[in-house]
Structures are given as structure tokens and as C-alpha cells.
Image 1 (cartoon, rainbow, N blue to C red):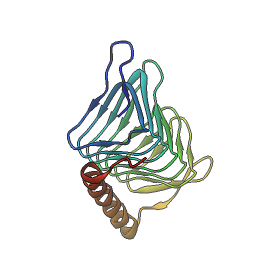
Image 2 (cartoon, rainbow, N blue to C red; image 1 turned 135 degrees about the vertical axis):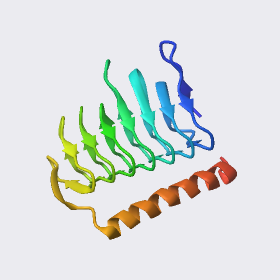
Image 3 (cartoon, rainbow, N blue to C red; image 1 turned 90 degrees about the vertical axis):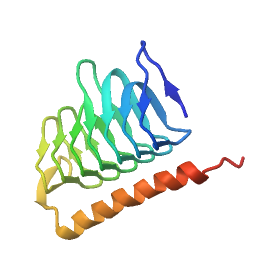
Image 4 (cartoon, rainbow, N blue to C red; image 1 turned 30 degrees about the horizontal axis):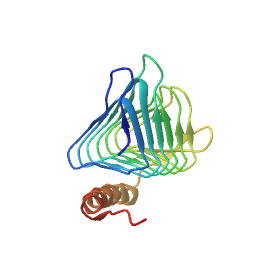
Length: 174
């Protein structure tokens, strides 16, 4: 797995976490246990700290970055979908960041919030707990329904199981 020390700071990866061989993790990144870091994901903590909580999936081609003096914090049981970009953002536990969504500096997703695919969460915007944000610029459009909440719980568990299966069975066959 491509882990890179930068300016004396090294990534730390929790137990039973899968990092795809084409993902890149640089610098002061702390990734929890039972996480899934997908193909092409970039966690670039060269300027400052990035934290990813337990049982979180950072899916294919997602990018996490941070500017000097700031942080990017991702909670536990979070889904960061394919191609999402998070920069100097805070995402609390059990959130979903949809495919291709963008969270700009100082954006905050409180617990159990959902950012729709393609949404752009503007600098400093707070997505309240239990709400769905959508659009560009993102706006709060509705409450997270019980069905969506159940879908998120299922998704977190599916990625947790994928992590275990991938660690046990993934083999390069080139």
C-alpha cells in the first residue's frame, strides 16, 4: 500500500483496515480500524492532520485534503462515495457524502446528515443532523427518512464486510 512520510509525519492505519494498492496516503493521516480505502483514493495530509474514524469507507477516487493550520475530520461509520472531494471539512459520525459531492473549507456535516450526489457544500455551511443537503450550492432539502437511515446503516455494514472479504481474498492476477 502506498503510504508516504512527509516532513517527518507518517500515516497511521488502524487494524483490519483495507487500503487499495492504488490509493495514496501522505503525511499526518490517522485512519481508524475496519475502514475501506478504495482504488484511487487520495488522503493528502501533507500540510496538516486528517483523521478518519472507524468503519468508514473512503471510496474510489475520493480526495481528502487540508490546508496549513486546518484539519479534515471524518467520523466513524461514514460513507464518502466515489469521486467526492473534502477539503478542510468536518464530517461527523454516520454521515453519507454522495458520489461526486464537494465539501469546501469549514463545511460541517453533523451526525446522521446526508449530502446528495453532486452537491457542493459551500465554505462554512453546516448540514444539520438528520438533514439532506442537495444542489449547487447545497441547500437543506428535507429530513433524512427512516428508509434512508436504514439504507445508510446497511451501506456501512456492507462496506465493513467488504473490508473483511477484501483483506482475506483480494489477489493481483496480472
